[in-house]
Image 1 (tube, rainbow, N blue to C red):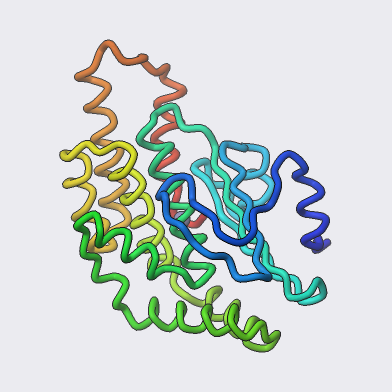
Image 2 (cartoon, rainbow, N blue to C red; image 1 turned 135 degrees about the horizontal axis):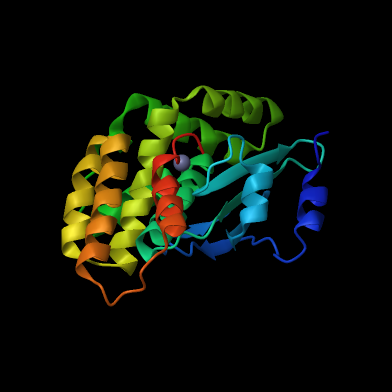
Length: 239
Ligand SMILES: [Zn+2]
């Protein structure tokens, strides 16, 4: 049964939806939400991720719910599961924020934040990506039911590869701002710039395992944690 936005909010009573001007936790990007949009960042909430992820993905997920019967309200949400390593936590948060920004037609904010940090990402110039943002902007500006429907159809039909590549820019921005290890950022920039999802995941996994090998003083993860962490990267594919 399809739930109403009011029910969705009621069900997650621990978090209050944000409206108006908001600052995203991972990327630090500030956006002005359109007046019919509410946003909830669930933070680490495995139960929520399991409940809302279409293909359960241990890293995290983001959702966009549109309700024409509730004053054209849109609810954007994100949540993630706890990864045993900081790098994975930060990257996943930024990645999900990348989805939220794209879903709300605000990807230029992500592009300019990336540019401020010195990243030039040609992915934002792809026609598929530009069209999606233009349609989203039109839908949120006009609040027209038909245009919203067209936008959601377009979002549904946009390739997963394209959406995931843009989301990865969010992961890169969050790591650059919060973790700031030049070797990590330089290495991750190349695959993110190219939109190479597999290479980005492989780089992060390898970087993380090297970090653990060379830093015996850091908390040694158990085998279960190690596998869980790798899964956080490797199965992020379809979220
Ligand atoms: Zn994703």
